[in-house]
Image (cartoon, rainbow, N blue to C red; front, side, top):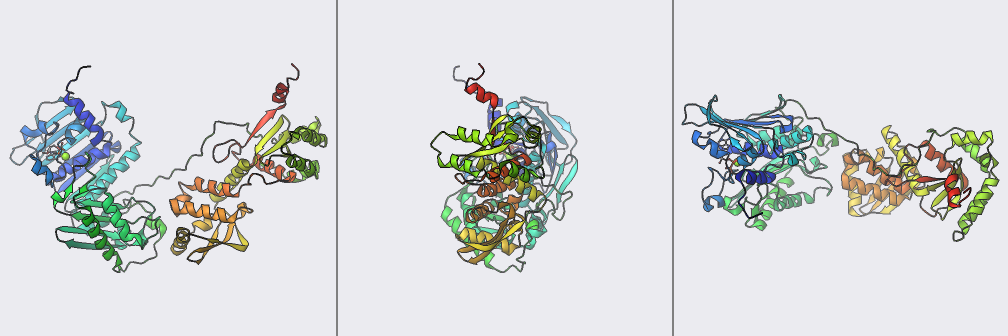
Length: 633
Ligand code: ADP
Ligand code: MG
């Protein structure tokens, strides 16, 4: 192919990849245009998470008829004309590519009335083509309607998530912009339902509306200036900290940005008053001379570069640090559930709350699928049964273990089966026990890792640790589901040398009155700044290495937060606990212990795979063995 210039349409579609990553990014651009046009009212309505339609109506200065088509054309902007303009840009837009990009991948209608004109005009674009400009009915401002985003770029359309997810992103974009302009009124509708209506008012009022009353009650409002810098906003007290970063808003000259310099300075200001795992909540605005900051870093314009980032860092840190040190009068006991609430659910002026979706993590799948068990409940009297069957057969086991290097397990197997006529023969008892006990009965332990058992079909090989882990895991899951993870107080509490983070994790939970440890069946106490005591562990995990178990649990809580270890991270948490409680390799088990494990496996759902997706056992049938030995061929 010879070198050729790309068609404009294609250039716009390529640009759209960066600017219009998803409906929410288009919404952001449209709302920014409304603000750049000096609107005081911006109404947003969405259909199907913005994928079906994004509609933004404003009462701004409008677009004159002869510029309507240009507005949809690439690199057409009314906001800058020279490099000097770019370097001191104060408007949100300046690249002149958002509308063209959006129009190139949707069916867009742009309707506008500028003050100088008698009536409104409209133009429509369908991917490539622009319609004629025709008169329209609109008394003021601009209405832009973006339909069927990505209709002509199927590859991109495939990346769209579910309606709820896309709506969530749109809502977040809407909130970010609404926070930045309290002097403008905003409304949001989704699928015809009112989601938010925020009247123009003070910054404090707007922040409260968007972030919720709880946030406002726990926050300080501050406003600091130094030379030509101003840093102001609302910062929640450390007690209102959260498990995630989702309540953190920073703005530079009115533009929402994610910036490392700012977030680092803020983080530091909170540092000595907050546990490292918690995230502060804030809405903060930095204002400076536009020439001191470069906003043209990325097409989405959410990154900035400061000319003197050290000065900015110092100023931000000191302003916030000072403000946080001032007493707020807010209570320090914060209910975790409250702190975790969705700020969008309860603002003063909003309509319907947004439900929080909690999904359970799917278990990791395995490709290995051992046959499933016929019986699912542990039969009563099983213990008696195998006691009777095996009596004191531990000698045979020991022999296997004592001579791991010698391949004499076969002899032992035979001995074992000879002493177990009930299993080795076709007696009635045997066939009924085969049904009752599909995992069969233990013959011995192999190299301290595998349990060998005999069932009706032949040989069963069990990965002892993996199976035990799985059983513990399922038992914990069931117990937690029923809110009954029983705690076993330790006769002698185990004290452990703990690092600062471990101690802080426990201390924070205790201070907050969190019952996560209790729910998981633990009882911890802080003995000194570097000693913890474990006073109780889950009854189900008796025999576990208490210290390792305790540390693993604290680490998960520190990493994910108390709420998440009981929700999204729950299965991981229980997996960690199970792993630390499961028998280690090289632990000698008695035959009754091995049989108890086999019975537990029969009774436990999904015991065919361990928590890491590996199989826990497999069957070698007599037929398989016969084949190996070429018997009957
Ligand atoms: P940019 O915002 O970077 O200039 P856009 O593609 O977003 O580029 O918009 C192109 C031009 O269309 C803007 O410069 C502006 O003149 C005009 N425009 C877009 N939306 C509006 C609006 N809601 N009200 C008035 N003018 C608008
Ligand atoms: Mg723009």
